[in-house]
Image (tube, rainbow, N blue to C red; front, side, top):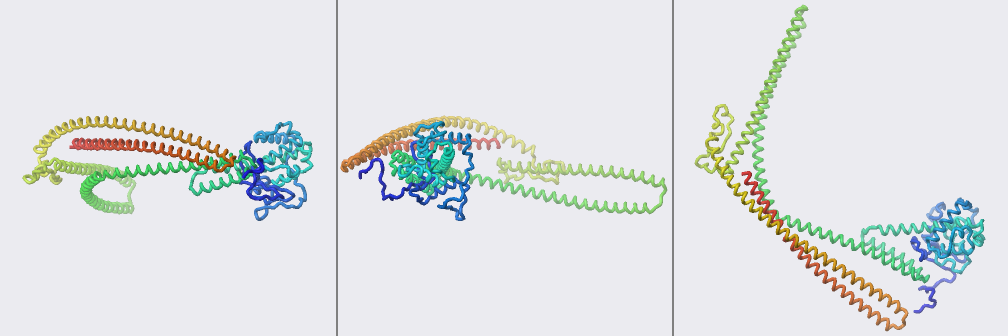
Length: 623
């Protein structure tokens, strides 16, 4: 349908001719010189104010923090005149304050893309036209339809400040003579309040956008909610741009929305990549656990060896407990002897006390007392010497007994080791003919006989055991020499295996290089295909814009079908390239897997051989 007026869009519904509305989007956006700010407040026309939105209440609370709220949490501005004007606490008449305000206003106008010439001198005493242009530029950042000629400039400015919640009245007479010395400070302060209000709005929107950019992806529902909010903000602003016939603004909003959705897509792709990597790590762990299960027979054999050693330890513990019982019996005997001696000591102490009482009841001369004291000192000294000698003898006896018991225990351990070695060397195979020929048995009760053979159950260590051990030592020395020669051969085989492993590693590295080259080629071809596709899409968009100006529907459909078929061909070509590259990548990956598997098997075989060789050498050395 053709438009009646090319400079203004038509709405989708009917409009009310008696009043004008402006939209109030959530928050505010960043200042851009080439874009306008959407309205935050309802326009007021004909002395009638439309109902304010939730954002209007936010702006009023930010601008006037000292306004008292009602008990319900909301406040309503009264239509009745105030009883007394509220005084302005700002030093608006001071020259320093005015200079600061002029500098801030000049900086804001320059940074916001003010299209008219402006300077500090102009702002020190502006003309009515300059003031009109400045106020129109600032208020159109809030309401794009401000000062459109439907109302007087003075009425519309006063109504706008009142709607925004400016706490001080704006005189219409002052607006007529804006540059006069007695009215310009008040209007300059009002403009500074308006700039601060816009700054609060911008910072609030920046915080909202920053929080959305910094937010992490917790769930798909959260991303969907944020996307719906972003689309609502886009729809709110885009509809205003549509009504205002602002095509650059409309295109910029559409590009911003696409960029926002692309960021979410990148986050989802990153999460997908992370989950894929986690799954690959879990699969590697499962493979490692399966490989560890192959070592189960060896671990079972090791457990049986440990069980055999545990039985030996139990036997040793039993013997130690028997030895402990013997020592406990000795301790009990010594304790009984100590009790007897303590009883004798108590008797002696009682006799001494009786003698002391008898001495105290007797009457002696001074010479007798002195003589008895000397005798007492002499007896105490002799008793102390005797007690010291007794303690030394007891200590020496205890040390000898302890050393003897330790030597006996060591001798028993040696005998047990000897018997175990005899069993290992298969010297006990002659038990049927002569059972006690090589096995030893310790008899501590025959230690005083003087014959070592009787102590060891009649076994002649020097005559029969030592010659046999010497001959076995010579045999094992010869076996060790043979084992060393076998070890050298195995080491040569190990070096050859390491060389083969190094060659396989080089092959794997070459395959890695080929894989990286294929991936790089895939990325280059993908980039080229995407570039070609983007160029085709741009051509399609340009043709679509031309098609809108045509009136022949058949030509439009033919062009659309033509470009659609071209897009489908390009997409098929891209998919074919992509499938070919994926197939090449899978083939290279399979070759890499085979090489790595062969390398792992070779490494495992070498480790097993080395482990068997070390065990064989250790057994030879122990023997």
